[in-house]
Image (cartoon, rainbow, N blue to C red):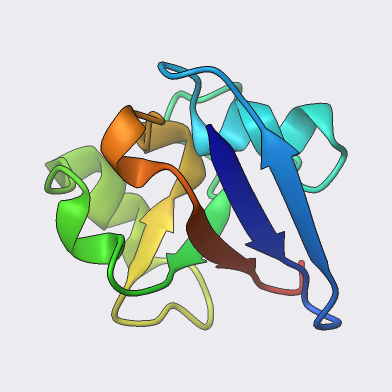
Amino acid sequence: LAVTFILPDGREQTLEAEAGRSLMEIGRDADLIEGTCGGACACATCHVVVSDPWFDLLPPSAPEEDEMLDIVPGIEETSRLGCQIRLRPELDGMRVSLKPA
Ligand code: FES
């Protein structure tokens, strides 16, 4: 499955990954995302802004994720934490933007 990360400077990087991996893990392996807390919903360094139409295909965010997003500067309506989003076949080709750290 493919995921395209749009970097803060506008460059794009498309990565191939297996279903079941989180966007944080995929981005971290390519040195695009820090993922400091290792996916425990506690650091928000995995913040991504999900492009349409993929945002609507995501499972709703858990309260822990919402709380964390509340303290992230510059969140947008389709902001999510990358560690809480696992790739599945319907999400193939999805595009997410990364914000400057
Ligand atoms: Fe820390 Fe997602 S990796 S909140």
